[in-house]
Length: 334
Image (cartoon, rainbow, N blue to C red; front, side):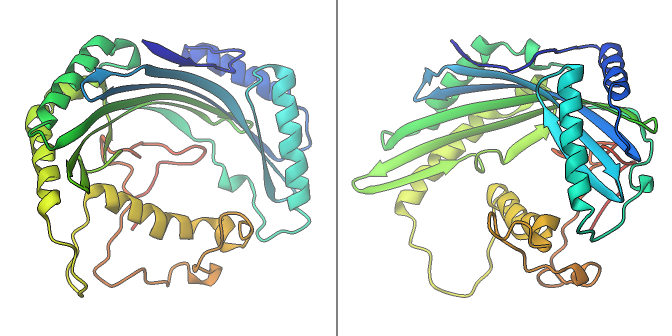
């Protein structure tokens, strides 16, 4: 059973040559007095498979596509986007980007030029063999049903869930100064959980948390996982939580599981480093940041023991790539 998410795609070219031809045509259709112009076509397909208490749930499929437009004029960048993939639609998005750049030029904080957008070229593909189209949904449901049974290690387990999420993304980037980039990524995320109950006491244990097990790989990686052993461990730990003592009030060592660690990095490091928060643009929306412009290169995050590294060249990791858009090969950042 499937639920199909309605798509707004007007044009969905699949082969590289066709997309590059369209990008070139769209670039040529834009006549604006700008120093630089970039177009990024992104097409994303997703599939989610769920099993709850041994019963297959409706699958969700979705497809979306659009073009992101970026212009540079008067030392400022402006942005626009559209899902109307025609020359007229792209021109409207470019006009919006141009007007926003002109508006930003009235309050400049930094004067940009084309050096910030070098003409990078190249291609990147996630290390996968089986993509979304090769996923056997029936086999995935069967695996989920088997795992739900393995999670139910005792009568006290009152609910079990298993989920698989796959997202396949193709990105094509072209610019007025010759950039030409193609990226094709596939990410797979999994989770399973067991809920245990004893009277009024209810505890839930998951497989390190939803989205904690996520990587760039293909569906073939699912076959390599020790699923049954992990499911039995999750179920047993849910039972252990029923009898666990309350967390004491004390200063002590804390070990964070991957699901909490990725959330901690996202909230405590990722959000505060967002420039719109630092400059105050988001103060009435998402908030501000304790990081100030003068802190770059000098601010010590946490204790000297903290070491957070962004390493996109780590093969198979969620942010892995050999190219950034629109820029040069990504550096390792600490």
